Length: 332
Ligand SMILES: Nc1nc2c(c(=O)[nH]1)N[C@H]1C(S)=C(S)[C@@H](COP(=O)(O)O)O[C@H]1N2
Ligand SMILES: [Mo]
Image (cartoon, rainbow, N blue to C red; front, side):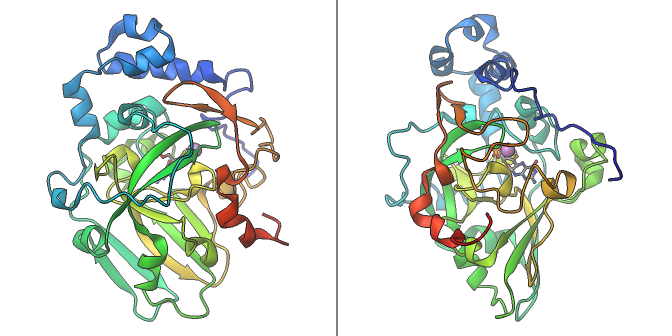
């Protein structure tokens, strides 16, 4: 990338990346949903409880796979994974403010640009250090493993957070079915690679497309690492990364790649999209850590996109008991 530094849209000056910023975005979301200015001027929790325009909302939140696989949902909730005293984020809030740069860098526009993106057929190529490279089709991804629902906390590096009911299966279950070779130490994920049809890729050709992420194999095999194929009791709408994405709840949101098309088992640490762009700002591990500020802003606090409330950020996003042991003695 030579020495040219292109700022990311999320690089707001400290004074802007506050609840007001999210509030402004929310006003635009509400307007897009046809709620007009009255709702937008109400205090956040009230605005949030106003019923949105059902037609637009239904389109924006409809499963990208259509009615297919509807019989597999809702899946039984696994009570082991709770969100403490936090409240679930209303579905239209989680589905109205997204990061999915392939469509657009404007968070509240993602759902509109993503509407109707075709996900059937879908293929995930499995390659690298596995006994037998193969390709998984939509049926294998949606029906190949028992589904469960988990409530997870979610923390974006930009300091917004939410609580979402994801449906899917442990990443470990999928990885084990691929027969990784003993030499594999890392896993790399590549996301939807279709520059012709993705407006965000055309608009921002300087990014290192396709979006790609990676985990150490033990992280990927941690109990919490989850392959997500549904949210709020139905298959994923496009803006959340249909037909499958990851939820890695103890890491910043960007460690959860959306609309995955390739899984590669490797014996070295893979490159990652944000790390390629800004090595110092987006490390490979990127575990949620309130004591480790982003070079340009503090990570101590976060804003809940459902309620607009602010709260302190927890180490490992509150999942330290299950994950901290993986990092003892390691610089992560
Ligand atoms: N393919 C892809 N995956 C992605 C992103 C992206 O731009 N493209 N953004 C990441 C970031 S920064 C966040 S915070 C989450 C957002 O997920 P959500 O929009 O479903 O809440 O997706 C992550 N995965
Ligand atoms: Mo993010």
